[in-house]
Length: 127
Image (cartoon, rainbow, N blue to C red; front, side, top):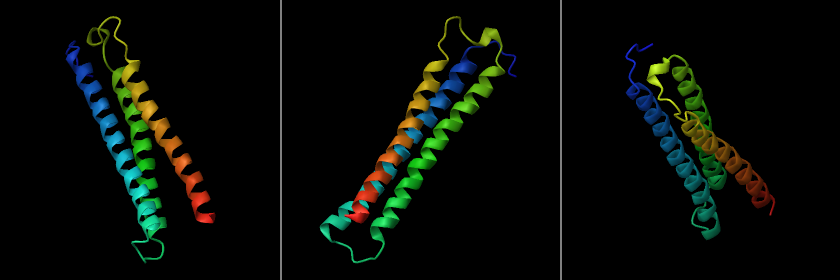
């Protein structure tokens, strides 16, 4: 507990939540690029390394999964922190749900991206 009765404490926590959100988006993007780079190499026949596509696929998927989990855990951490704030630290009518919804959307979209990539990989592996 802060006992400061200052809304800046809440705003600092929310900035941290949104920083986790930006980090998750960046890592999801990096994971997608890594996953697609392996496909690009395979299409252009630039690599003779056996398993190059699979390695790129799983590394990219791991980054996307890590980002989705990290985004979800940041919501839990933020909500736990907000529970400990006093009423004076939360401005009247302030919508606490905006940052958590943003992180939840990023987390869900990360999971949906994993499902999309896994389904596409299955088609590519057999075809």
